[in-house]
Image (cartoon, rainbow, N blue to C red):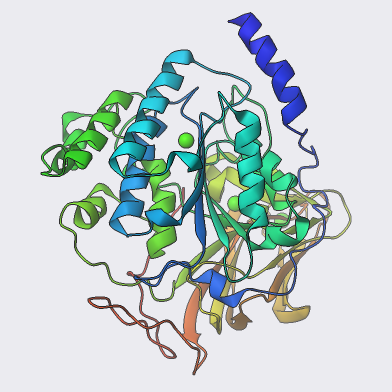
Length: 464
Ligand SMILES: [Ca+2]
Ligand SMILES: [Ca+2]
Ligand SMILES: [Ca+2]
C-alpha cells in the first residue's frame, strides 16, 4: 500500500502541475469584460446551450459518488441532454486510493454508461489514464466559445480540473463555467486527508465560477447511515417500472446511506433551482412531469470568496458562521477590495436588484465598506462600528445591474476590525423592459420580460 502510494505520488508529480498557494492575494486579472450573453442561460426547457463535462471522485474518502454519479446521468437523460456530454473524469482523487472504492466507482460509471448509452470515448478513469483524463479536459476547454460554452460540473476535488484547464488556451477559459456545491471538493473545510488545489486556483485561471448551494435535501442521512424513513424518500426509485432506475437505487444502496447531494449541481444547471430533493427527482424521472422553466432567478448569492479579483484581501475559513464556510478579509491594515463580473446562470440580463452585503462587525474598530458597479459608487458607504462581533447585512436598494457588469466592494480596515465579507446577495426587483427572454417550450411556463419575474418559487436565503 505504501509503495503504491509512493509510486502514485511519483507519477502524479509529473502529471499534475503544482497549484499556486496564493489563496487569493491577487488572483490574476479580473474576468474579461466581454460577455457571451447567451451563455448565462444554459437550458430553455428544450435546447441546451453548450456542452457538459463531469468530474467525480469515488475512489477514496467517501462512497457517495457511487450513487450520485448514476443519479446525475439519469437527470441528464430525463432532461434529454445526455448527448451534450463531452468529458467525464472519475476516480479523480489522485494522491490516495482505496481499491474497493475504486472498483465500486467503476461499477457505477460503467453501469450507468451501459444503461444510458454514454459513449465510452467520453469516460476518463483517472486511476488508469490520468494523462488522458487531463488531456480530455484541456481539449474540452479548447473547443469552447461564446456560442458553445462548456459547463463543467465539479463533484470531486479540484486537482484534475485544474491540471486540464491550466494546459488549455487562456483565451478559451472564459467560456468555461465551473459549477460546484461542496466546501470539501472546493479544497476547504474540515480536516481533509488529501491536499491539493482549491477553487481559488481554478478561479485564478479565468474560468467562470458558479457556486451551487450544498444540496442537503438530497442527502437525508448522517455521514454513515440513513434511517428507514429517510430511505423511504427514494422508495419510488426501487419500485420503478424502469429497470435503469431500479439499478440506480441499488447503487445508492451500495453507498450505505441515501446521499446523492452531488447531483444537486446537474439539477441546478438545468432548472436554476438549487434546492433539489428526492420528490423533485421522482417528479422528473418517474412521473415525467414537465417542469416550469426557471425564468429568472430572483435571489442570487455571490460568495465573496469566489470573486474573480481579491485585492489585498484573502479567503478566511470561517466555519458554520459563513456561507460555504468561507469569508474574505482584508489581508493587512491597508485598503482592500473584491471585484467580480456579473455572470450568473438564469440571471436577469439587465434589471434592478437590492444588493445585500453580508459583513462581520468585528470588535476593536470600525471597518468601512462601499459598493461600486462599473466603478460608480452605489448608495453611501457604511461602517461596522457596533463592534458586537455579529454578522450583518447592509442592503443598497434598486441597483441597476446587467450581464458582465463589474461588482466591487471596497474594504477599509480600522484597528482590530480588518473588514470581513461573507457574500453579496442580489434580490431582483424588476427586469429591464424589453429584455429578450427565451420562449417557452410546450408545457412549460413562459418567463416574463419586464415587471415582476417568474421563477421556480422564491427561495429564502438560508444559512448553510
Ligand atoms: Ca464527489
Ligand atoms: Ca467593528
Ligand atoms: Ca462565503
